[in-house]
Image (cartoon, rainbow, N blue to C red; front, side, top):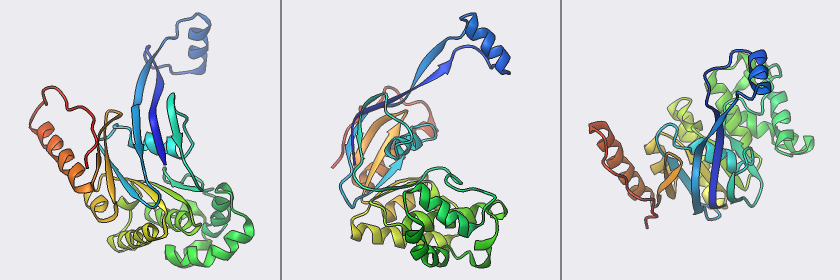
Length: 258
């Protein structure tokens, strides 16, 4: 996984809220619509070696989820190149890839199809997925009846049972009970031994310390530090503590550690 000077810009409307399509159409026809750019990611360059588990930390709005969406191919960079080698299995937004009127079992095949897996392939894996998710008889109930934790269990079980080359996870381990989180952590550690590349976005620094082999810190779309987990988290916590005490004069340039 390689990012080379990857940037992403979003267009934001300068005018106030538009409450209807009619109002938007009138403003567009009368040339009263104007936009400004918001840079979500700013010239990110880093490598994630095969089999590494990268933790991504940063405050809300730092660009962490946007980074994952580019890695998954959901978004395309405005500048730069993001290169991913291998089959990608993403869990980026809870419920994505599920049809809520279908049962959990039916969604296993539906989700597998979205990941490019055949029916026969998923049929061979369905028992393992059901067992890992621990949904029991609920596997044959509609997804709309599931709690958030149940959806997370099924999503993680599917994503990690299809033998991905690259696994992308956004805050997935922050949902659910501690026992199941531990079970997920153990599976991810097994992925490292099998050479699966994993990128984990999380506000849980303890989870990143337990699982990840390296860490990347994003701040307002910029790479502040990238290197060993303990060093990057220590730097991040110093910044967080300083922000809680008051404004930080100036700003440290982006750099790699280790």
